[in-house]
Image 1 (cartoon, rainbow, N blue to C red):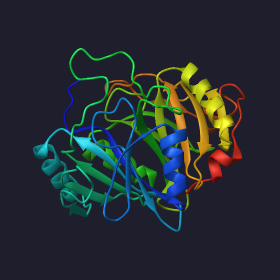
Image 2 (image 1 turned 180 degrees about the vertical axis):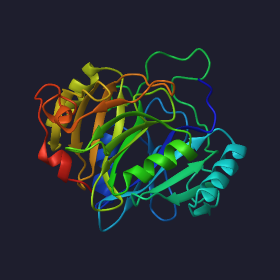
Image 3 (image 1 turned 90 degrees about the vertical axis):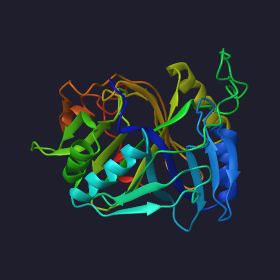
Length: 311
């Protein structure tokens, strides 16, 4: 498929209540590389197979959660066109100047009806990886430093008005709906898995009464074996685990959900199916999400914490 418009998830800014503890966790336990700090004290990190300057930004705050989630677009023309399309759709946008984030160009920020701040940007400094860009090595020296995910992969966000969110992402931003869950006794789509690529998903939403909530940020592992290794590292470091290791029916990905020191949930995710825009979305019932193994294939049940604990 042609890679135009919105390309992929680019970065997420996470609020943490103890910056030192958070940096220690994301750097030493999760295994991200610290890339820099800005004048406001924000800390920038990335995973070992990422080539752009950063994908995770940590900001000290009084309350945990997410400030914004961003997507990289193909070029400046795409950025301008998508901003115009958003405005034509009735969505207010804001231009954030280049340099507001380290090594990042101008960003377009807008709030979606679920209460989340979404950003688009075209430029971020390419710093490469220690694998090299020519005749790359097969193995990174950071491959075994902590959990060591390959990349920041996606986020699941909780909030109201997911039907309106679906319209914006599909009609304006060019995403396609890969899978969805209908609410009990209705045909209303209460959970969405959306793609701008051919991954299992690039962002997901679940209906929730409170706006702007973060369910989890997901980090991609090469294999289910690496997910099991992540479980051992979590146990060795007394990381609180929510679910897993198990596998989803939805997306068919291997998974562990756990919490960082501030209570923000994160996921280590592997595998997953492929999604293409010409394929009709896969439908799940509420019963299929639980008893059908949509959430947890191994236990075939819903987990109360998964539905209720957000930041």
